[in-house]
Image 1 (cartoon, one colour):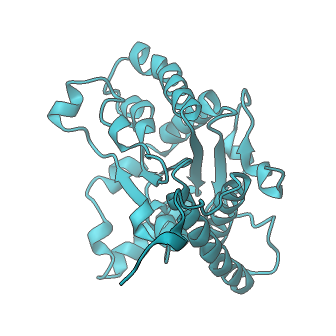
Image 2 (spheres, helix red, strand yellow):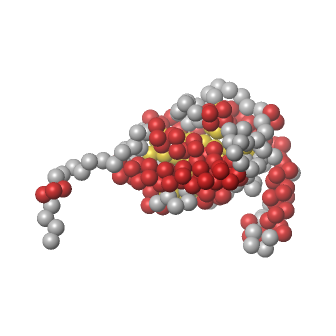
Length: 271
């Protein structure tokens, strides 16, 4: 995919330093929010059309991984990027605290059943990466265990790619001030207070640890077959524009088309 959006892709083997990135930038779109929203609407329509071809062709599969610190906008991204897209071929899987049966198995056991089948788009709202992020920050498993998981993840995603899954991974990057602004907005708006959790404040105090964990996880697992994109997300409209554009361009590269019927439809007798 030859596109200006490649500037946000983490090259395989590269190391990222999030402190050198600007989560408030809008570098690829200087026409402003209004024009971006109009272009997003067109891209949504395009994604919807290509999703129909993807579903009909039943050849390709797309896995989209969304990760980000609290309030980064994972839910909003799903809502805005896929609004109007036929839900028949799009699924969302969320991975929260493992259940007891899940904890009794390897960390990828609960993930594999949710990967896309032929013709599907699956969105992971949080993902298997929680097992090298939350478990590291909260010291839930020994370091020697979670460090091995980078290789396990790379092997897992390579296997999916070899089986025909197109993988796109997005880290929604906001700064600490923007998180505070969004938490305060939720606190003051009765219609958004349900989004708040008592853990939000303690988790916010672990900001630096989370950033360090994300930097290593992204650096260790951005591969040719499953690249990471670091998306500046302080401006929600720019976040949506970038992700919509990357998904749209990736689907275009698949050369999707409506398949020909396997029989002569003209011979059908419809009474």
